[in-house]
Length: 315
Image 1 (cartoon, rainbow, N blue to C red):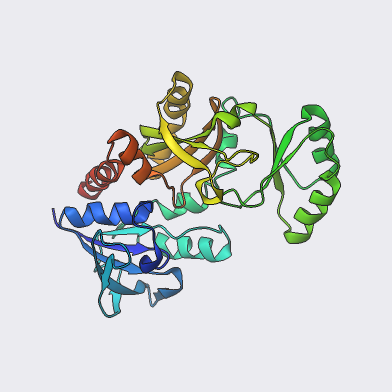
Image 2: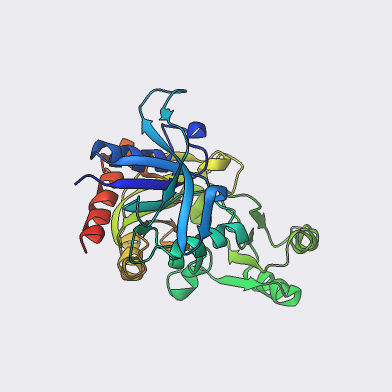
């Protein structure tokens, strides 16, 4: 089956070909004979009932520093000229991100968009876990200083993080005797009008934060992300070390509970974060970890993704 794939992403020439999940997805599609185009969110437009993108054809190769051969930009009518659109630009999950999702929603019924843009914008990664209160650690979403103080007094050792942050940026651990709580609240409140996330600290994070990859609601495998010595955060963006991991019974239970929701919402590629069997995030914007998973376990989640996409295209 030959199909046409348009990828909304950050500039392809800047990706790390040994780690980037979008590159792996595109490479897997190309291996199946797909034609590829890339465009950035600012090149997406709605005009006269059409969703169009100024996109460049691209051919990929595993050649560091010269991995993308790009052609001249053309204007694609995404309803007519593409079979699949991948929404893969990195957060921040801001109004520009949400606007792109609104525009791509107009392709419904004409072109398959993955992940489904309606549910991408309606499933914020730190809010979606609230649908499953029995699976998550004690959590507070609030901007009320009194509520935040009470949560800290109740749980002592807590994690504070921006509601719409990503990659581990702006994540702090505040112990029961830490005098920085008030200053951090001032910093968070000065930077945005949004609530913040407070969670009870999970000591199991020192053994790693497990990234579990789900394809169309089914667990494909997991990697572990271990924090550097002296660091609370285990995100790869801030120096966490990826290592092999097996799915525990608790991990499988989490996947079994949330999998049907992901499948129903068209969130075909999801990466959930699990610490000590507790769900902390459901990543659906541009989940990562596919190349590490294949390297450690041999599981080709990019191929599984396109199997799922092809089933949806046939439907």
